[in-house]
Image (cartoon, rainbow, N blue to C red; front, side):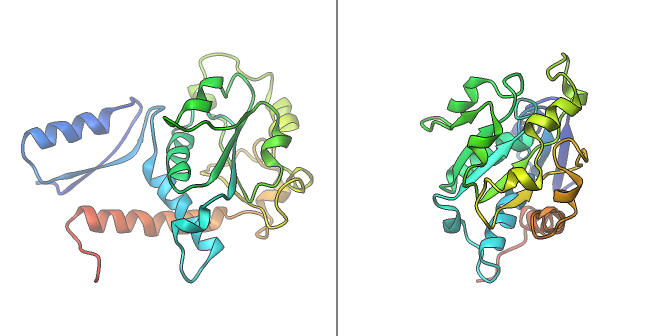
Length: 226
């Protein structure tokens, strides 16, 4: 008798399999993918889009605001379902998406991740940050790493950690996002984490509640007012 199934699973494709079975049974229930394996995390991408657009225009957030805006996604892209969903969403919105990370965490094939669209891939941080309006830092997925893909956390922070000094390469009004939880002193320095003029992390958390409430309302049969 469920109206909505919220599925978070370690294996990629499980939400799609459930949705197919529900359709086969002609059930009206909806399936919300809350993260599946190394595949996608759609609701995180939606809340990130809303965070970016509402920052650019708090009164009338809209996707057109992201046309041509440079967004750098930095970190463990190989293991990140957030990265995959954000890449799809940002490219669809017309953003200029750049990827940056160690070669072991950012294979070259991510350049062709979106069919018909080539993404700039950087194995050094500076080119990705140059002029970026927004930077999305990703958590190191150490629990999903089956091999030693980075020398150490200290080395990762030295080469790819976001600090106030490094962010000076970006747009003067740059803002940093992170899906959380943050490894303090690894992906972000403490100064960046605690500076509300630099990061939008608290807004991401608040928007995540609102966006997911809206999805549950719509999937449960609610209607958007005319």
